[in-house]
Image (cartoon, rainbow, N blue to C red; front, side):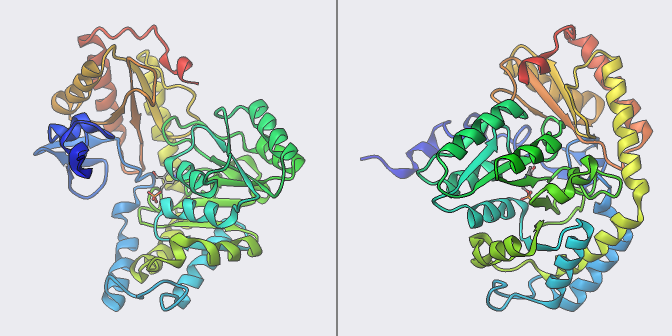
Length: 414
Ligand SMILES: Cc1ncc(COP(=O)(O)O)c(C=O)c1O
């Protein structure tokens, strides 16, 4: 007789080889200290390029003061219960109004996690007659929301950012149409830093009578003249039906928001099971987030700093011969031909141990076999010196391991 737990004693499952050896170096590493550009890893100082603290707000004094005041007043848990029953407050409503104004939409609804917000929004809206058309490179929350919403039925993935394929899928969805069509994509693609073709997607959505949901987790607070995100960047915010942002990146908090016209937002509020059946976001976060929006509105210099540092880092890597793909944002993917998984891990180890540079790396199947992708996130709390130290490390890594940078692995990853 098979025991359910048999598989847990093998090296199967996601990251099973790492789990089986009790790894804590490549998976679940422990970074010590306040999230920022400088932390400790295994007792040694490191420059961290692996966290989404884009605007450096994890250590912002005004935001910490607001959090202290909220903690003093409300503790960690208030209010209790789901918003549908006992967990609603004036502050939650004020935060939603403030976010709606920031995002230039009539209404918004907040969620406890970005992941739950994406899943909740998609599953609330899409019923058995509707179909989801999804960019193939989408984040797990979009994939999971789409799978749940389409349970047992067909959804239509399209090739990443391929507008011809999207149009083909929309034509197919229209032909079989029994209900509505929801197109879902990211604004900024979190691993590669490239942007969704939002103006063309808005055109297609309008032409085929579809609605567009943009998960702008990595663009919220960063993209556009005022940090309102990719819709603002492209001048199409008013044409995006539902805009989604997480608080877990530039906002350095926790939670997420879906913004749009009042009726669909209210429909989501009442039908998103991830909200209806979950305790509401604690006031500690709700009140702190009101202060965070103030800072984001009042400090455009933080955004400018991230972009300037990102340019310096990306230009420097390209000058060394590294392939940074077609990023259009601060996210800096470095595609390195490593040959094998072992060499990829050795590169990560050398950067951390010999140069104090902490980057995360991903390998196959996210990138082609034999390639390692170092995803680097410059933030407002990095310094020019951090960039220079890191570029020196990458130069020495290239020379020590004789990495053949004439190959451009990102081309095979499009
Ligand atoms: C595109 C995208 N959507 C959703 C999420 C989930 O957000 P959260 O971490 O707030 O749950 C993430 C986080 O990695 C993301 O990158």
